Image (spheres, rainbow, N blue to C red):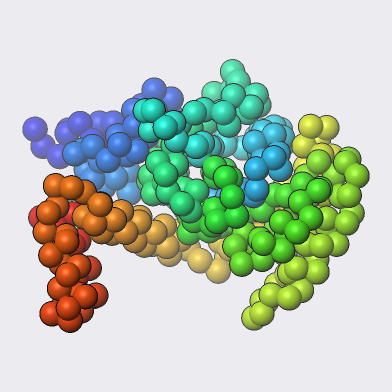
Length: 318
Protein backbone atom coordinates (compact mmCIF):
# COMPACT_ATOMS: atom_id res chain seq x y z
CA UNK A 1 0.00 0.00 0.00
CA UNK A 2 1.41 3.41 -0.97
CA UNK A 3 2.01 6.08 1.66
CA UNK A 4 -0.73 8.16 0.04
CA UNK A 5 -3.28 5.48 0.91
CA UNK A 6 -1.62 4.14 4.07
CA UNK A 7 -3.45 4.00 7.41
CA UNK A 8 -1.71 7.09 8.80
CA UNK A 9 -2.54 9.19 5.75
CA UNK A 10 -6.15 8.05 5.76
CA UNK A 11 -6.50 8.80 9.47
CA UNK A 12 -4.90 12.23 9.01
CA UNK A 13 -7.34 12.97 6.21
CA UNK A 14 -10.27 12.04 8.46
CA UNK A 15 -8.87 14.28 11.21
CA UNK A 16 -8.76 17.16 8.74
CA UNK A 17 -12.47 16.74 7.97
CA UNK A 18 -13.29 17.37 11.61
CA UNK A 19 -14.44 13.84 12.40
CA UNK A 20 -14.37 13.57 16.21
CA UNK A 21 -13.89 9.81 16.21
CA UNK A 22 -10.87 10.17 13.93
CA UNK A 23 -9.40 12.82 16.21
CA UNK A 24 -9.88 10.53 19.21
CA UNK A 25 -8.17 7.68 17.35
CA UNK A 26 -5.29 9.91 16.30
CA UNK A 27 -4.74 11.18 19.82
CA UNK A 28 -4.72 7.62 21.15
CA UNK A 29 -2.03 6.66 18.64
CA UNK A 30 0.08 9.71 19.43
CA UNK A 31 -0.32 9.42 23.20
CA UNK A 32 0.60 5.74 23.32
CA UNK A 33 3.47 6.30 20.88
CA UNK A 34 2.37 3.32 18.80
CA UNK A 35 4.54 2.14 15.93
CA UNK A 36 2.43 4.19 13.51
CA UNK A 37 2.74 7.39 15.58
CA UNK A 38 5.67 8.66 13.52
CA UNK A 39 3.86 8.12 10.24
CA UNK A 40 0.76 9.83 11.60
CA UNK A 41 2.75 12.82 12.86
CA UNK A 42 4.32 13.14 9.41
CA UNK A 43 0.92 12.91 7.71
CA UNK A 44 -0.49 15.62 9.98
CA UNK A 45 2.44 17.99 9.55
CA UNK A 46 1.39 19.63 6.23
CA UNK A 47 -1.92 20.59 7.84
CA UNK A 48 -0.52 22.42 10.85
CA UNK A 49 -1.41 26.10 11.04
CA UNK A 50 0.27 26.99 14.34
CA UNK A 51 -2.70 26.93 16.70
CA UNK A 52 -2.19 29.13 19.79
CA UNK A 53 -1.64 27.20 23.02
CA UNK A 54 -2.45 28.55 26.48
CA UNK A 55 -1.18 26.69 29.54
CA UNK A 56 -2.75 26.75 33.00
CA UNK A 57 -1.03 25.66 36.18
CA UNK A 58 -0.97 26.44 39.86
CA UNK A 59 -1.19 24.89 43.30
CA UNK A 60 -3.93 22.47 44.30
CA UNK A 61 -7.24 24.02 45.29
CA UNK A 62 -6.83 27.14 43.17
CA UNK A 63 -9.81 26.21 40.98
CA UNK A 64 -7.92 25.63 37.75
CA UNK A 65 -10.46 23.30 36.15
CA UNK A 66 -13.40 25.54 37.07
CA UNK A 67 -11.60 28.55 35.61
CA UNK A 68 -10.71 26.70 32.41
CA UNK A 69 -14.34 25.60 32.14
CA UNK A 70 -15.47 29.24 32.40
CA UNK A 71 -12.93 30.27 29.78
CA UNK A 72 -14.14 27.54 27.42
CA UNK A 73 -17.66 28.96 27.68
CA UNK A 74 -16.34 32.45 26.90
CA UNK A 75 -14.38 31.23 23.88
CA UNK A 76 -17.39 29.33 22.56
CA UNK A 77 -19.55 32.44 22.79
CA UNK A 78 -16.97 34.01 20.49
CA UNK A 79 -17.39 31.15 18.03
CA UNK A 80 -13.99 29.56 18.57
CA UNK A 81 -13.37 25.81 18.48
CA UNK A 82 -11.53 24.76 21.62
CA UNK A 83 -9.25 21.79 22.21
CA UNK A 84 -8.34 20.96 25.81
CA UNK A 85 -5.57 18.77 27.19
CA UNK A 86 -6.48 18.17 30.83
CA UNK A 87 -3.55 16.52 32.58
CA UNK A 88 -4.74 14.55 35.58
CA UNK A 89 -2.76 12.63 38.19
CA UNK A 90 -1.87 9.10 37.16
CA UNK A 91 -3.72 6.23 38.78
CA UNK A 92 -1.36 4.27 41.05
CA UNK A 93 -3.04 1.08 39.80
CA UNK A 94 -3.34 1.46 36.04
CA UNK A 95 -1.11 4.45 35.38
CA UNK A 96 -4.00 6.09 33.53
CA UNK A 97 -5.69 9.42 34.09
CA UNK A 98 -8.13 9.71 36.98
CA UNK A 99 -10.32 12.01 34.80
CA UNK A 100 -11.16 14.50 37.56
CA UNK A 101 -10.56 17.55 35.36
CA UNK A 102 -12.78 16.31 32.55
CA UNK A 103 -15.66 15.75 34.99
CA UNK A 104 -15.51 19.40 36.08
CA UNK A 105 -15.47 20.82 32.53
CA UNK A 106 -19.22 20.96 31.96
CA UNK A 107 -18.90 23.58 29.20
CA UNK A 108 -17.65 20.80 26.92
CA UNK A 109 -20.77 18.67 27.30
CA UNK A 110 -22.78 18.18 24.12
CA UNK A 111 -20.63 20.65 22.18
CA UNK A 112 -18.99 19.24 19.07
CA UNK A 113 -16.71 22.29 18.86
CA UNK A 114 -15.06 21.49 22.19
CA UNK A 115 -12.86 18.42 22.56
CA UNK A 116 -11.44 17.58 25.99
CA UNK A 117 -8.78 14.93 26.25
CA UNK A 118 -7.68 13.78 29.69
CA UNK A 119 -4.04 12.81 29.79
CA UNK A 120 -2.23 11.02 32.57
CA UNK A 121 0.85 12.74 33.96
CA UNK A 122 2.60 9.33 34.03
CA UNK A 123 4.58 10.49 37.04
CA UNK A 124 6.39 13.33 35.22
CA UNK A 125 7.55 15.70 37.93
CA UNK A 126 7.01 18.71 35.69
CA UNK A 127 3.29 18.01 35.67
CA UNK A 128 3.08 17.26 31.96
CA UNK A 129 3.56 14.19 29.82
CA UNK A 130 5.51 14.69 26.56
CA UNK A 131 2.45 13.28 24.78
CA UNK A 132 0.77 16.65 25.33
CA UNK A 133 2.97 18.25 22.67
CA UNK A 134 1.94 15.64 20.09
CA UNK A 135 -1.74 15.98 20.99
CA UNK A 136 -1.52 19.73 20.37
CA UNK A 137 -0.53 18.96 16.77
CA UNK A 138 -3.59 16.73 16.39
CA UNK A 139 -5.85 19.57 17.53
CA UNK A 140 -4.02 21.93 15.19
CA UNK A 141 -4.49 19.66 12.18
CA UNK A 142 -8.17 19.24 13.06
CA UNK A 143 -8.68 22.98 12.70
CA UNK A 144 -9.20 24.03 16.30
CA UNK A 145 -8.80 27.75 16.98
CA UNK A 146 -7.11 27.47 20.38
CA UNK A 147 -5.75 24.75 22.65
CA UNK A 148 -5.89 24.97 26.45
CA UNK A 149 -3.50 22.81 28.48
CA UNK A 150 -4.16 22.36 32.20
CA UNK A 151 -1.46 20.65 34.23
CA UNK A 152 -1.85 18.30 37.14
CA UNK A 153 -1.05 20.88 39.81
CA UNK A 154 0.25 18.67 42.59
CA UNK A 155 2.89 21.06 43.86
CA UNK A 156 5.06 24.02 42.94
CA UNK A 157 7.13 22.39 40.18
CA UNK A 158 4.60 22.00 37.38
CA UNK A 159 6.51 24.22 34.97
CA UNK A 160 6.86 21.96 31.93
CA UNK A 161 3.76 23.60 30.51
CA UNK A 162 5.98 26.59 29.61
CA UNK A 163 7.71 24.40 27.02
CA UNK A 164 4.50 23.76 25.08
CA UNK A 165 2.39 26.87 25.73
CA UNK A 166 2.58 30.24 24.01
CA UNK A 167 1.03 31.90 27.06
CA UNK A 168 1.33 30.66 30.64
CA UNK A 169 -1.43 31.37 33.16
CA UNK A 170 -0.61 30.70 36.81
CA UNK A 171 -3.65 30.43 39.07
CA UNK A 172 -3.61 30.87 42.83
CA UNK A 173 -6.26 31.36 45.49
CA UNK A 174 -6.47 33.43 48.68
CA UNK A 175 -4.99 31.89 51.77
CA UNK A 176 -1.74 30.52 50.35
CA UNK A 177 0.33 32.80 52.56
CA UNK A 178 3.97 31.72 52.59
CA UNK A 179 3.23 29.39 49.69
CA UNK A 180 3.56 32.32 47.31
CA UNK A 181 7.13 32.82 48.42
CA UNK A 182 7.83 29.16 47.67
CA UNK A 183 6.44 29.70 44.18
CA UNK A 184 9.02 32.35 43.30
CA UNK A 185 11.56 29.87 41.97
CA UNK A 186 8.99 27.82 40.10
CA UNK A 187 5.56 28.78 38.90
CA UNK A 188 6.04 32.55 39.10
CA UNK A 189 8.98 32.28 36.73
CA UNK A 190 6.79 31.03 33.90
CA UNK A 191 3.76 33.27 34.43
CA UNK A 192 2.59 35.53 31.63
CA UNK A 193 -0.62 36.13 33.56
CA UNK A 194 -1.23 35.69 37.28
CA UNK A 195 -4.79 34.98 38.35
CA UNK A 196 -6.13 35.21 41.89
CA UNK A 197 -9.16 32.95 41.57
CA UNK A 198 -11.88 32.65 44.23
CA UNK A 199 -11.51 36.41 44.63
CA UNK A 200 -14.81 36.56 46.53
CA UNK A 201 -13.02 35.04 49.51
CA UNK A 202 -11.34 37.00 52.27
CA UNK A 203 -7.69 37.75 51.61
CA UNK A 204 -7.86 38.06 47.81
CA UNK A 205 -6.47 41.60 47.82
CA UNK A 206 -3.65 40.58 50.15
CA UNK A 207 -2.85 37.64 47.87
CA UNK A 208 -2.63 39.97 44.86
CA UNK A 209 -0.34 42.26 46.82
CA UNK A 210 1.88 39.33 47.79
CA UNK A 211 2.12 38.31 44.15
CA UNK A 212 3.01 41.86 43.16
CA UNK A 213 5.76 41.92 45.78
CA UNK A 214 7.05 38.51 44.69
CA UNK A 215 7.35 39.36 41.01
CA UNK A 216 9.01 42.69 41.82
CA UNK A 217 11.95 40.69 43.17
CA UNK A 218 12.47 38.75 39.94
CA UNK A 219 15.78 39.58 38.28
CA UNK A 220 16.13 40.26 34.58
CA UNK A 221 12.42 40.41 33.92
CA UNK A 222 11.14 42.47 31.01
CA UNK A 223 7.38 42.70 30.98
CA UNK A 224 5.75 42.05 34.32
CA UNK A 225 2.73 39.73 34.21
CA UNK A 226 -0.70 41.18 34.76
CA UNK A 227 -2.38 40.19 38.02
CA UNK A 228 -6.10 39.57 37.58
CA UNK A 229 -8.81 38.57 40.02
CA UNK A 230 -11.54 36.12 39.04
CA UNK A 231 -14.43 34.20 40.48
CA UNK A 232 -14.72 31.32 38.05
CA UNK A 233 -17.96 29.99 39.51
CA UNK A 234 -19.79 33.25 38.73
CA UNK A 235 -17.80 34.34 35.68
CA UNK A 236 -16.42 37.46 37.31
CA UNK A 237 -13.18 38.55 35.66
CA UNK A 238 -13.26 35.82 33.00
CA UNK A 239 -13.82 38.30 30.12
CA UNK A 240 -10.82 40.35 31.29
CA UNK A 241 -8.72 37.19 31.45
CA UNK A 242 -9.82 36.27 27.93
CA UNK A 243 -8.84 39.70 26.64
CA UNK A 244 -5.41 39.50 28.27
CA UNK A 245 -4.81 36.02 26.83
CA UNK A 246 -5.79 37.20 23.35
CA UNK A 247 -3.41 40.16 23.62
CA UNK A 248 -0.52 37.99 24.73
CA UNK A 249 -1.23 35.35 22.06
CA UNK A 250 -1.15 38.06 19.39
CA UNK A 251 2.20 39.31 20.70
CA UNK A 252 3.66 35.82 20.76
CA UNK A 253 2.48 34.94 17.25
CA UNK A 254 3.95 38.19 15.95
CA UNK A 255 7.33 37.26 17.45
CA UNK A 256 7.44 33.58 16.54
CA UNK A 257 5.95 31.74 13.59
CA UNK A 258 4.27 28.37 13.90
CA UNK A 259 7.38 26.41 12.91
CA UNK A 260 9.49 28.08 15.60
CA UNK A 261 6.86 27.39 18.25
CA UNK A 262 6.60 23.74 17.18
CA UNK A 263 10.38 23.44 17.31
CA UNK A 264 10.28 24.55 20.93
CA UNK A 265 7.73 21.82 21.70
CA UNK A 266 9.85 19.31 19.77
CA UNK A 267 12.87 20.07 21.91
CA UNK A 268 10.77 19.37 24.96
CA UNK A 269 9.71 15.95 23.62
CA UNK A 270 13.28 14.90 22.81
CA UNK A 271 14.59 16.12 26.15
CA UNK A 272 11.94 14.26 28.13
CA UNK A 273 12.41 11.03 26.18
CA UNK A 274 16.16 11.20 26.79
CA UNK A 275 15.73 11.84 30.51
CA UNK A 276 13.18 9.04 30.85
CA UNK A 277 15.50 6.68 28.95
CA UNK A 278 18.47 7.32 31.20
CA UNK A 279 16.30 7.03 34.31
CA UNK A 280 14.97 3.69 33.06
CA UNK A 281 18.48 2.45 32.31
CA UNK A 282 19.55 3.33 35.84
CA UNK A 283 16.58 1.71 37.55
CA UNK A 284 15.67 -1.24 35.33
CA UNK A 285 16.89 -4.47 36.86
CA UNK A 286 17.21 -5.92 33.38
CA UNK A 287 19.99 -3.45 32.62
CA UNK A 288 22.60 -5.19 34.74
CA UNK A 289 25.34 -3.22 33.04
CA UNK A 290 24.15 0.04 34.59
CA UNK A 291 26.02 -0.72 37.81
CA UNK A 292 29.21 -1.33 35.85
CA UNK A 293 28.83 2.01 34.06
CA UNK A 294 28.30 3.86 37.33
CA UNK A 295 31.35 2.12 38.82
CA UNK A 296 33.37 3.29 35.80
CA UNK A 297 32.38 6.88 36.60
CA UNK A 298 33.23 6.54 40.30
CA UNK A 299 36.61 5.02 39.50
CA UNK A 300 37.42 7.63 36.88
CA UNK A 301 37.49 5.18 33.97
CA UNK A 302 34.87 7.22 32.11
CA UNK A 303 33.31 10.65 32.39
CA UNK A 304 29.69 11.25 33.43
CA UNK A 305 29.01 12.44 29.88
CA UNK A 306 30.26 9.19 28.37
CA UNK A 307 28.29 7.24 30.99
CA UNK A 308 25.13 9.09 30.01
CA UNK A 309 25.75 8.22 26.36
CA UNK A 310 26.21 4.54 27.20
CA UNK A 311 23.09 4.46 29.38
CA UNK A 312 21.02 6.18 26.70
CA UNK A 313 22.25 3.71 24.10
CA UNK A 314 21.09 0.87 26.34
CA UNK A 315 17.66 2.41 26.95
CA UNK A 316 17.04 3.50 23.37
CA UNK A 317 18.65 0.91 21.10
CA UNK A 318 18.56 1.59 17.38
